[in-house]
Image 1 (cartoon, rainbow, N blue to C red):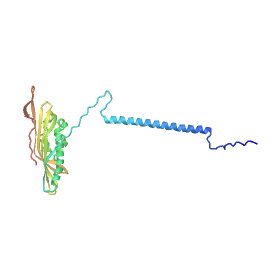
Image 2 (tube, rainbow, N blue to C red; image 1 turned 60 degrees about the vertical axis):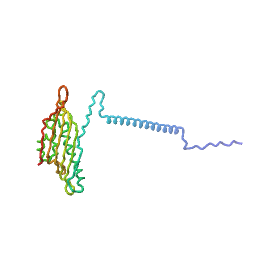
Image 3 (spheres, rainbow, N blue to C red; image 1 turned 180 degrees about the horizontal axis):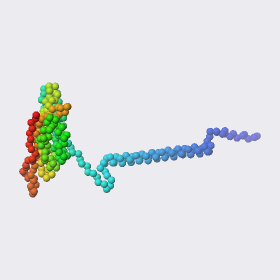
Image 4 (cartoon, rainbow, N blue to C red; image 1 turned 90 degrees about the vertical axis):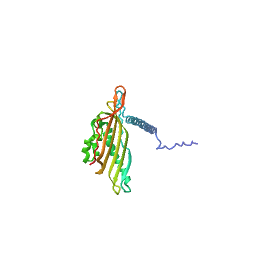
Amino acid sequence: MRPAPRIEPAPDDHAPQPEDVKASRAARSGVARSRRRLFVGLVILVVVLAGAAIGAWAVLSNPTSSPAGSATPATVPNRPPFFFRIGVVRADSTGRDALNAARDSSVVIAGRLSSFYDTVFMDPATWKEGVPDRAWLLFDSSVRARARQESASFTLGSQAASLKSLRVENTSLSVDVLADPRGNPQAAVATVEFKAEGLLVTGQLATITNTASFLFRIEGGEWVVFGYPSANTAIETQALTPSAGPSSSSGTSASPTSASTSP
């Protein structure tokens, strides 16, 4: 008997040949390396961006920082503006909403007076350069020129140039608003008391007191002063002795006392 013939498996046309297998493995290896390079590149990019962000934050959060060896500029704090605290507010009207209208008007009037007093008394720039023109816009054009001529009644006058520092001690503001029967404000009277303590360049202490009564009315939608029945600024300085320092005696400076009657 002849032995049965061996049955060989049919060749698989789709089976990978050794060369194909090597090429496939190489391709997969190249893709893996590319992915690793991409991942490493992304990690490096993230680290660089994070470092840049931290550096920018450090610079922005510390604006006074300077290179080594260079001088750091001194930071001068902003001077807080002066503002009157409103005391008594009265409404002269029978209108039902007159009091609310008077309160609203008093806030606006207090703001205008606060800006004026902050400029003419508290601003160091005014001590050196004089009262700026914009300060007199508080007054109506009909009385503005006269108010400027009588500026010693509203300001530090000639004593301003000798002032080294000034702080507010006591102030008061009361406002009476005249409204029509519908409650619309028409005019107002503001009574001011202002007191501050200062130091002169000579080392003397100074007490500045201002009292004034302002008549307001609305012109062009804005409250302006059209009269001032009374206005006075007084400046008292303490005399100094060479040995004992400030003495108990005091004298009044050359700042004049002036009263003006509204037109």
